[in-house]
Amino acid sequence: MHSEEEIARDEARVEEYRQIYTGVTLKAARTVELRTGIIPAARFADKLRRVALAAFKGYAPRDVIIRDVSEFNKRLYDVIVNKMGCAKGDLIRITVDVSYDEEGQRLVFGEPKIDRFVPESEVKAAYEAKIKELEAELEKLRRELEEERGKRESLRKRLEELLRELGG
Image 1 (tube, helix red, strand yellow):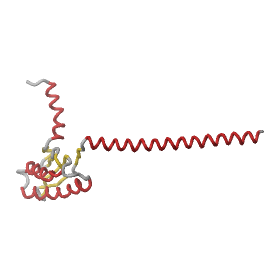
Image 2 (cartoon, rainbow, N blue to C red; image 1 turned 45 degrees about the vertical axis):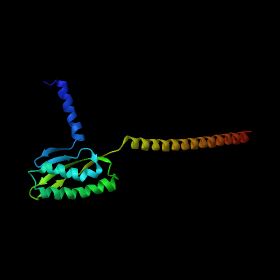
Image 3 (cartoon, one colour; image 1 turned 90 degrees about the horizontal axis):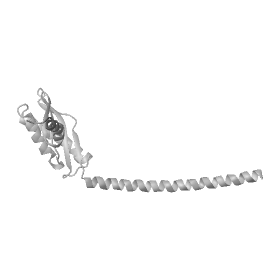
Image 4 (tube, rainbow, N blue to C red; image 1 turned 90 degrees about the vertical axis):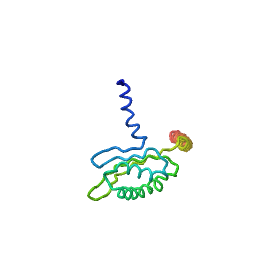
């Protein structure tokens, strides 16, 4: 027998596992969510093909799955490599809804969600560089502020002199 606490903990982990691991979630008749899990970018095409073959086995002809996943992978390559700038070893996760159009004998892919996982050291280096840049900008603004205060003080003194001359 499992305690309520154990069951609640297991239920809470379902979403975590769904995000991390490869898999397929049935969303409607002949519509699934394909997930690659976290993989090196160089492996995305193989992984998506395998997951799609597993998901649509028995529903769609093998040649249709391979053809349509291949076309989809070409589009994904452009996004992953050219738009996102991922290198082969970068870790990514792809999630996409796919439906099988029986009448049209084709797989219909939704908009993919591509998550890129950046090493902590890269994130740290980027934000440290940004902090230095912002600190330099802050220092420049402080100097400009002091300069303006000096100008304002000079003008105030000059006005006081002029007022004394006019009054005196």
